[in-house]
Length: 83
Image (cartoon, rainbow, N blue to C red; front, side, top):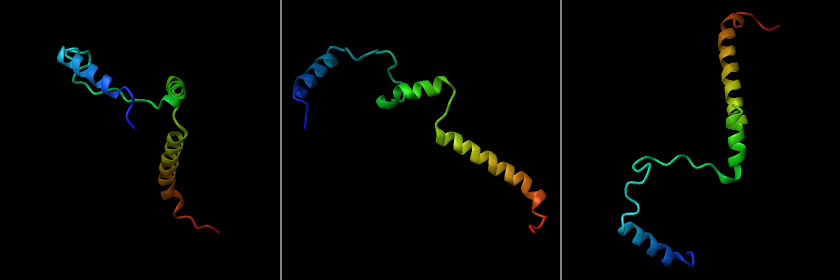
């Protein structure tokens, strides 16, 4: 369902475009910054400012560290037999 004022909005945009209102805007030709989820914007900002990371990132880093540790120690322990 369209917005009740869609025709008026479209007409105003066309008028502004015809008058050159959208020419030479700051940031023209550059990509838009990523849009954060408005519901989580505050939480994301606090996590970013505190240097934190989402839990799945921390778990992925820990898993990588443990895999590397296992790989490094695997050569030394593989010759031993479990009793």
